[in-house]
Amino acid sequence: MTSQDNMSEEHLPEAHGAHGGELAVHGDAFADPGLPPHEHRRTDIDEHAAARAERQVAMWFLLSMVATIGFIASYVLFKPGPELKNTVYIFPLGHISKLNFSLGMTLGISLFAIGAGAVHWARTLMSDEEHIAERHPIEASPEVREQVFADFRQGAKESGFGRRKLIRNTMIGAMAMVPLSAVVLFRDLGPLPEKKLDSTEWAKGKRLVNMNTNEPMKASDITVGSLTFAKPEGVEESDEDFQEVIAKAAVMLVRMQPADIKDQTSAEWGYEGVLCYSKICTHVGCPISLYEQQTHHVLCPCHQSTFDLSDGGRVIFGPAGHPLPQLQISVNGDGYLEALGDFSKPVGPGFWERS
Amino acid sequence: MKKLSARRRHPLAALVVLLFALATTGGLYAAFAPAGNAQADSSQSLQIEQGKKLFAVGCSSCHALSGEGTKDGPTLVGVGSASVDFQVGTGRMPAQQPGAQIPAKKVIYTQDEINELAAYVASLGAGPSIPTSDQYAAGDVAKGGELFRTNCAQCHNFAGSGGALSEGKYAPSLDGVSAKHLYEAMLTGPQNMPSFPNSTLSTQNKQDIIAYVQHTTDPAKNPSFGGLTLGALGPVTEGLFGWIFALGALIGIAIWIAARTPKAKKS
Image (tube, rainbow over all chains, first blue to last red; front, side):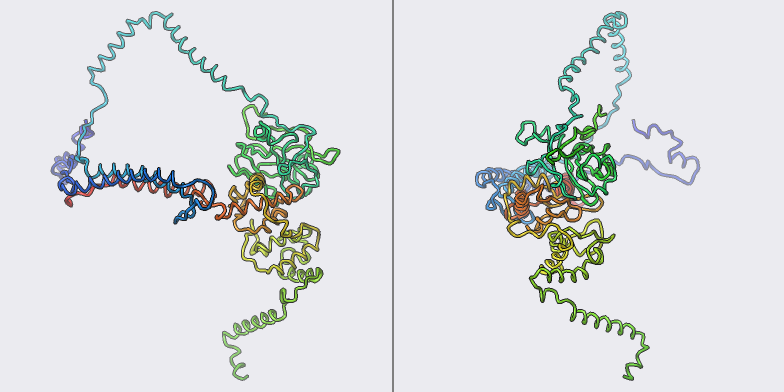
């Protein structure tokens, strides 16, 4: 059934012409011209051309074999390692490891040659005669449909699904209950983070330890315009849970002229212009420390969130939803910088239960 | 003489007079201007005196006559000689134009003149002084790599090739920067780079970082095993290369697979 059959006769151009208009089209302008006559390729009619194409396909496959042998040979011959003698200069790649280059090239050629041979084979030697596959309507014939509906009605009647309500209801109940076992299993993926996201290793009286020297710092060590990374006292890189702890507790120390600090609370939480901020971006938790000492901006390289450390870590650009948390610090009796407690807000990205 | 006065109303007369005046002034200046390091004296006070003259000519328009700074340039009181040696020694100063970032360019002062300028600026107020060559000798590469990743890689990238900062600023590439300038940059924190004073990043730490930077940016010591580095800038250049060359090659092959096979007879 085509669209032409749906069109009523008087809308066709021929009909207009028949009613006395000047427009007269002879024959059917929209008739299916059918397929053009098939044209043979050279390889279809010339036995020599076909033989040559066969040789070309075989050459591709042979090339693949040679490349595979080359791969094995390269693996045996060339040494890995960071020495300059293991590299070779190849234009335009520059200096490159002999092993990397030869393995990549030979494996690439051996795979590509199989594909190229297959494509060349299909294009030159496999039959390219056109075949027409007629399309049929998807809908079944009315008799078949009627039979199916009748069978369904009879089946429903014989099973008594509508009549025996006890069976129906218990079956629905059983099927609804099955997914509950999945809920219990998924519960095992927990436990829920509890309050772990709200707190870090920082606590009152913990000294700030320089990440470079592993020594506690005095306020005079932090000069104006400098940037220093610190960890809580008692946390060592050799600890088993170091990565877990530092992922939340990492901080950076900056110092600015007290007059440059716009946020009064922020200034009070620091010590004579020394401010201590979390190093974890509040967007998705990338470590950030791209600090610009003139503008006091900190940029996150992941999504360009920008925080102003002179204004309480306020977000001035980008997708971050919370200001950068500041750690309240002071100096202890010996003059070393220490924390006055944990962060007042959870560090890092937001989460459902975040207060 | 009469010939000359007859032509004094010629349309080009003003231009000729102007060129003559400019050439004379320039010539006189070249003849009488302080002749650079010609009479450079090693004595401290003379060096400061020479530096002050150079400063008045080259720097004072932005940093004011005695280095107290204007709205175009910050105060230089207390920045120290290391800062001057870095800024002028890498060509960043004198700045071509004010902007988000003052880039490195051709160095226009000789090292003697830079030393004189540095001596003068150091005399304005105490600050970090130019390091001696044993201070910036290369240290331990492996330790330097750790320190670099903690302190420097966030802006200068894992390979030292630099990266973008906010509002047009950027961290420059560290390729080819001399050990002395690396040390001075860490010590003084030029432009928007924070400083890493000896109290938080020791001289030994700085030497380790210098060793790492010089190792990692030297293709003879640290050859690229993957061949073309594409600037070692990470996903931006690698993605661009993949989209253009890898996808381009795939499209080319797809066209070849689906192309019309040549026929025996032209239709």
